[in-house]
Length: 173
Image (cartoon, rainbow, N blue to C red; front, side):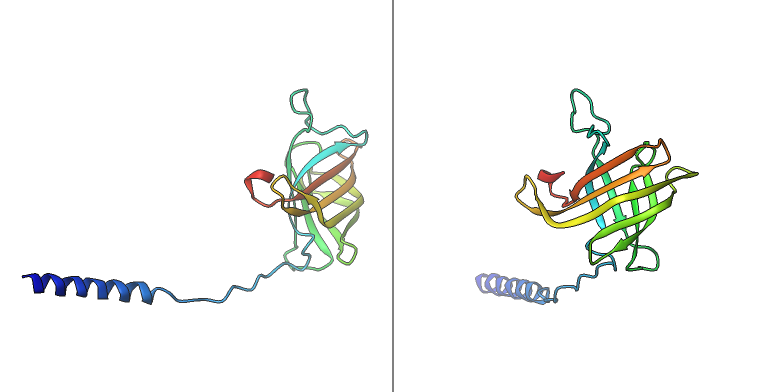
């Protein structure tokens, strides 16, 4: 009986070793593929300011104003000189349009861009740029920053968007 228990224990250990060692396949790291407009593409946590520097959506309790997710992404054709810019959805500051990109200068450019977020309106990019490794976040991480100054026919105003690349880390959200 004792011999049988020892034999069963050895058998169980053998099976356990076989199962654990057969699951140890190693794979090389996958190659990261970026769009043609990287590092200008991404999701950016941003605030929007009017020409006087007042934050959009600011209240006495929240002087920083509304936090927006500005999204910049490649076109269907993955063009190296074009990008989609999307900001908000229904607010006066909302943008959705295809803009020109100068990758070497990391600049967004465009005049009379159809604003698909607000039918029948357009916007102009007065100045737009991405600055690499420009912001130190509360978590200690360093992130890229974005700056876009634009005018819109929605309300005839000029707005400034300032933000940083979203990291998904809790401390920076």
